[in-house]
Length: 215
Image (cartoon, rainbow, N blue to C red):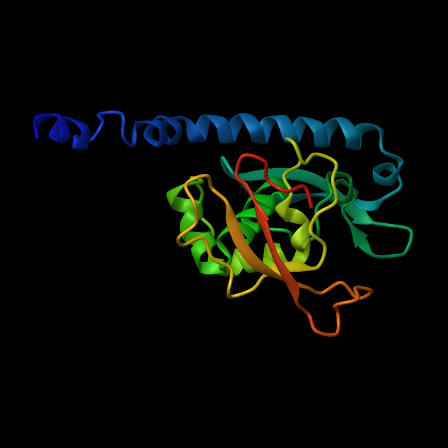
């Protein structure tokens, strides 16, 4: 009984990693903001797309990142087509009104793919991934990026194509799976040229947590 009580005792380290990170989040945010601003300034100084702008002025770009919201100053002006444009946004791969950084959007999309729910992904973001996001933000990221976002940019699946057009159906489950981490699940395929596109279903597949699939 004494041994069991000792085992059940909460570790004094519980929660300390997040507390340590949160205590330094602002420093990390400021450092990341300065680094990205430096990239923008260096590119704008020699970019022909910026030099050719008329009526140039600075525009503030607010972007939610893992470290917090960063504010960037980018030049915008009237381009050759007579429209206001901000070339640095295209250089950074950002949409005109993008709220989250590319890495944050990928994080949300991966969580949604793994949990099978926008709401569950939003809860997991705060509880396990240490960032806040609404289920609406998660949904927007998934809709924009598609299922290809479920493949991380590095690791054993680096360079492989994402699970294009596949989403987990409501019957996807992990309950009662073996201790080895093996999962079974049904996936729906929405690929237009798929032989099963008319039915929209695909047979169940198995995979082991020790060797996740590279779709």
